[in-house]
Image (cartoon, rainbow, N blue to C red; front, side, top):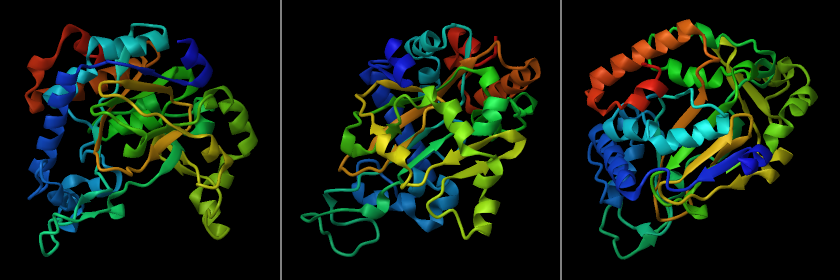
Length: 342
């Protein structure tokens, strides 16, 4: 915990075991194959279909960011990971309370991009003896904050007004956090060994400790909005704020910002759980290897600092989604608690 307090992130090894990782990977591939005609997990040639224009609506833009198409996933293995005692214990330790709630998030898959068999789904000829690179399969490198810096400090988001009429309110909940509702933890669970070259999470160590000072130095938010920057000819080398309804948003860093030079890749062993303070600038680095990256996102926060109406609304939709997914039998007593159902 001392490392986390100083640097704003920490890795817990063996949060889930190898068997669970393998089962979750199989579940992710099954979801992708069901949504992407012609895709076969054991045929790297078919990975080109993930980026097929004809399938983009079905796969939710997986070719760009590697994210699941749905904002929230309620399949059996994903649910088991989300309520695993070791996963929950890690977040409880850092928050300083066992009375926590967890997000209902999704997974990601980064396709391999180097040293691949030459033939892909739409190419002519076999080309199997030729190894090629596929830079077009790389995700976009980025650094950002999943919050509205100014409203986070001022506590002026409408997070407790979220109606949870649909699952889109789960990602909105992440972007509408405020200091008053903290601490807020974000996390990624490695489903496969994630080496430096495989692409994955970047963090700026210690940024949480200078966050408030950094926000004060930014000046008024208006100078960071896309509309203002467009009036000045575009954001160019300037960072920019992406405001969202209810006072939420995200803050994006250009690749020339000095903060980028402070970012560090965090490689992970299979089953490890990387957690960071939501005030820590973070992002991802594209895959530059012959191996996939596969991971699941999980966020944790204090139950006591959420409004009663919001808790009831999110509990209703979680119960509905679990019932529709047919995974009610997967719920454990701990899961009922951290999902807000008990």
